[in-house]
Image 1 (tube, rainbow, N blue to C red):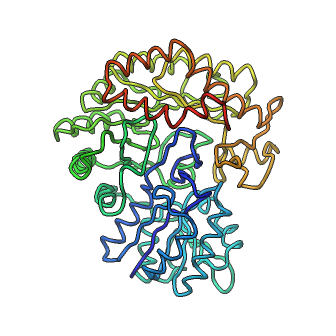
Image 2 (cartoon, one colour; image 1 turned 60 degrees about the vertical axis):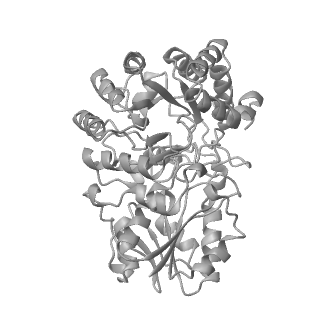
Image 3 (cartoon, rainbow, N blue to C red; image 1 turned 30 degrees about the vertical axis):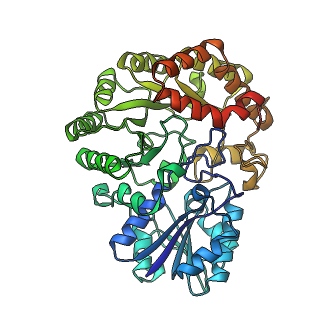
Length: 480
């Protein structure tokens, strides 16, 4: 079968749909479409002929998409979605269905996973939506099985939408194709950007799911509610070596697991496998603030350059309220351990969780200054359907709109639709803009970055210059 897998255009800009908070990001970030890539690899392994179009990354506008699809003439089209782009995504899917009447159109992604029936009711032209992990369900669909008998789908039938039950999770992640192989056939590193990493970088995933219970986090609750699973250390190391072999221009690997450090024993084993395999690429990974110094040393030895950690808030009450499972004291100790291990840190902070006040916002900024991460992001809370926090705010009447397009500004940047007692959504966004300027424009921070760039001109200096070049208009003007 000929299958087209499409990350559709949106606002004709660099819309990072795979990000946990999809948007046109101020830092210029563009995530690799790794969930779609896993599907592409599985379909190709099964003998299907696959067209893979990442429109935002390649700059393919909506007007060019029909011609590209007609030229390939697929029998099945898979279209990715996100909450803020869903209206546009449905419009593009409808256009595809009209232009290719012989093709069955499927939607995937967190939004349709959370709201499958609502999506199907809005789009009778769809064959189905895939709920959660879609590797196995869409492979079975491509193989010609009856859709109503495949777990993990919402199907449009003559009698109306039907849900076929929870999807089959992939239990053995080593059985999946290497993303490196799919990337080599279809994608280009230069089309993607992650501001905290050296450019060009490449993304991979070494696990699915997360055992922690953060109420705002969308992937574990919507895409991977079936539990935590991990690739073997040897499998991870093999892909690192392939990335270096296939893409000699790549300067870093970003491990985009929800939490790479879920299992301390596995952290050591992955680090040992990378060292034994002779890994030469620096890498970055998402971790929690309880990562031990010993694990940090092992990661550093294996080439790790930076840790990405969700500090989120300087208020312990707010951390408790979202079931973060970490403490402010742990955050401070984590930053000290990272410096001791010689690892840089990218710190993530949010504004607008339950209990937020002007005082707790200032606590968060003060903590960010004290932690001294190499880079930091300040996001207004963006709650997504399917998460416990979305349900809480919906129940409490905290959401100012049910129009998902307003999850973004008219420019496609992150917005906020949460109004808290004493704090409007506009104030939450304004705080993040202000916090970003106050963090980055400090003389001490600028001095540290200048020294870092002087000492390492071809690595950190190049990264700092490119990131600043993308980010400066938002930072200096405070533009939304």
